Image (tube, rainbow, N blue to C red; front, side):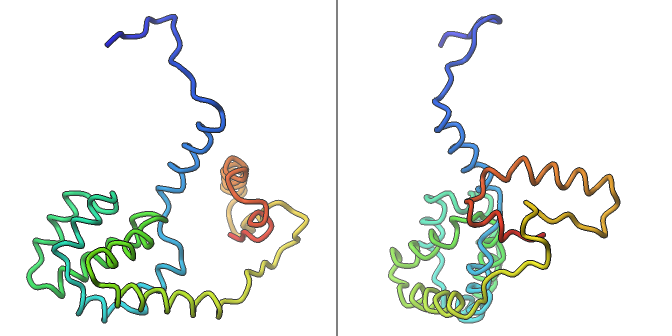
Length: 177
């Protein structure tokens, strides 16, 4: 494999691909959607009692939702209930795609009744939740926390401006801190 010389530049990807890749990486470090977290929370006891993990963990590993180390951590727990609780503790931290991958893995491991339970709960949550409301002037792009010291306000607004372009236009006006 050839090593680039000091004066050469690496091959550049088209701008659209780089932006999509950056967005995917940025979103990938975020947690699970709050509705998905709430759905898991509302069904936590049922899931802890009924999940059959052996094949399910392999599917989650294959989908890059858990790592080998996480699988070992889960399997090190004594008893299926404790193992299930450990998985349920890890899932919300595994990114925005974790819930859908978990549901898909439930279906693939013939635990569709648990997937149905989750999707039913999620559907109920999405119909009940009121729209986001903000108590700031919507003509401003983002609110700044008034209780923060001025130097932190500046840093916060700078960070928000850096990532503002990643939000859909409909979310920019609805986003509250």
